Length: 203
Image (cartoon, rainbow, N blue to C red; front, top):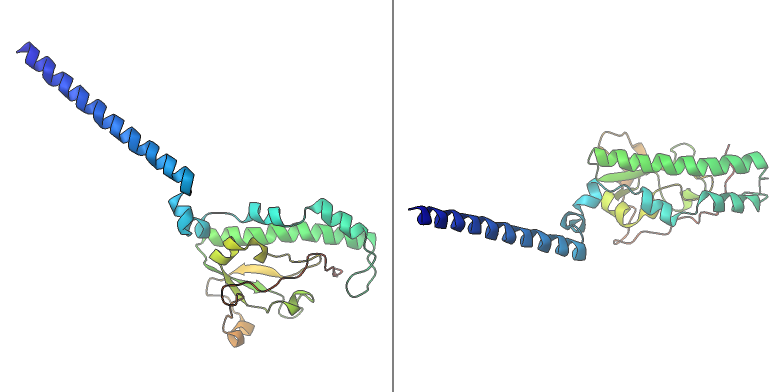
């Protein structure tokens, strides 16, 4: 009787060990697969739309503040040939940093509310003089397009006043009614954006 009980206990232990080894192998296979392909949720695009802040990607492609200040130090006038004085240079550098933060935060807050579309606010009454040649107030981009092209996040140039805003369907966009919420992309390709060195003196 005792040998039979011992045999049953050993059998149960062996089964538990076998199950544990199989589950561990399955888990390690999943980890290996994820390390090769990346997380499935990220690859699907769902993660990118809802979760991933554009902060790191945008700072990687935009000139750092040191480069901005160095460039401004070499300029004596803006694109309209207005004199650039030292206070103007300081304001432009500070505005660049502040605008980057504000626009990144707008996307991060939109992500928290599952916003899928964003529109460009170029200033209804006083549009940004540089951006006016590149985009229209109210043109929209999808969150996925922002994820694929973080350069879509303003500021686009020194002195840029354009903002990117989450579209929740409640905003009163009078000008976009005429545009029909026109997409910014054409056939899946983003149009050109202003060169960051275009400098407009801030009021």
